[in-house]
Length: 255
Image 1 (cartoon, helix red, strand yellow):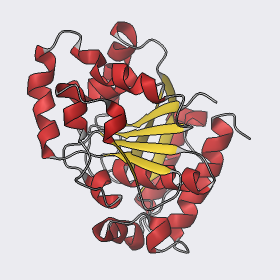
Image 2: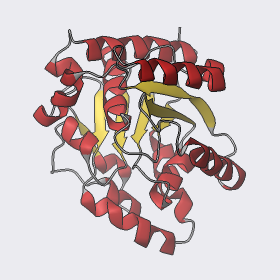
Image 3: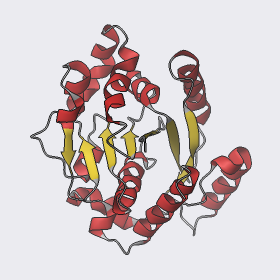
């Protein structure tokens, strides 16, 4: 099977992009899919969550120093799960990248060599809509929008939609909307329920049925350099990402 390239994108920070990138990828890896996470955020949170090694080149070197992308791939502690890590040097791409001819396609040109090696490639986007995010969306086949169940959750979503439209028009007409993932849901909070109702009313079947709850164990796991499945596989957070992986398989046409 040819690998699917899926980006998790939202210009707002703290909405669960990294948590979802890492743990959805991990859940699929546990189901024996060969899965790659590309950390395209200069904060490097996905890299820390997967306990990245510093012995391999970072994404910055692939995009700006022409290091072959295969050299940047490293194994993680989970079988079938691989990583291309990032550090704060990647922030320079937003300044240096656009100086290169065809800069919008830097990641796409590299990532195309990997689609026959992996079943899934997940890209964790930075919390902005700058050149790096443009690169990620140009390289992606599909995108998922993690959306937190909190006040102002929908703020900025229209701006994201406009950016996606421009990407489709100018760089990637095949880019598909995989769906909205509701995160940080607090069942005790009426606002969470109100936001869920509003999002489902507005986007209908483009909202995943699985909802990721607000869960302390999900927040703790990255500080130990672990996925939720290593840190607390019986937690509510782990169960939600297992459920999401099953739903994702169906949406992706795999079962």
